[in-house]
Length: 396
Image (cartoon, rainbow, N blue to C red):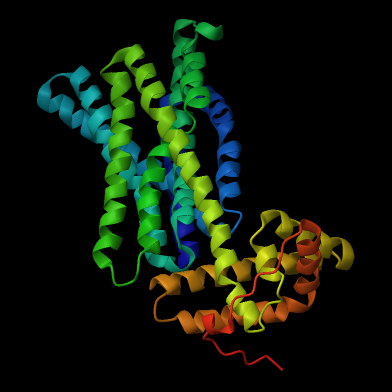
């Protein structure tokens, strides 16, 4: 019921932002902007989804993040930015100064705050599914991609409308220049800003439960960093001119994007190492076979196990193995959070629930993972039984 109410509200925000954007761009400009703005969206979403393959987030969280960015955050930003810029223009009697202040000061604060609300809601209401850095980065990426999608419709639609009014066409048109800057050069700009906020929430989610100050300060620091980078990006065009823009792009934005890309890939590899480190204790206790922890810590072996089950037993078996892999991954992350003191008081209950799901699927998953472990040369890893302190009611 609550989820239906949230998505109904987002749909209403989407209708309102649709009307507002169409009023500014006109029908033809809106359609042109929509078509051009759609181009980078599948690539960005696929990239963030790839990062999330080890422990995939529920689709409802990803859809909510994208919809919030495209509808709610875009609507809040459009209204707040417009009102703030008009107020500054009235107070200073200088429209040009108002536009500059709006772009460099107001927009970064309003837009990053509006996008950050999606992360805050998921952090507070879906804390069990928000477990670390990769989750924060992926959710921030989906939110910012949705926001950039709507914003690009507006910018590209306005550019096309201007070209129609003044007769510009071809590579010298405003539409071509806007497309090059926003779609070709910097499709990652908004995701890059908001990922800093997501990084803060991810670090907070991984922090021990008793570190309340850290869990509050880290998201705030991430939000401030996102605002600062956003202000630098907007200011490079508004205050420094074209050459300043390209200077900031080459000297700061590209290296920052490369650094965050490395961080996200490293974080994904760290997730696989966590699986390899935490699951052997369950193998020692009899919940998993000796080869499963190694197979589950390899993306290649996991894919091979699903394919083997699908070919040998049918599509339903392939889905069963995929579910088994997901539950085993969640179990490894849960135990890792407990090892750091961040699992919460319901650790034992959640552990039993995940082990129960594994046991129900073990008959199909175990031979498939064993085959994948042999095919990929993954050696078994079994830790001493003392690392596991749970009770196995299914052992015989």
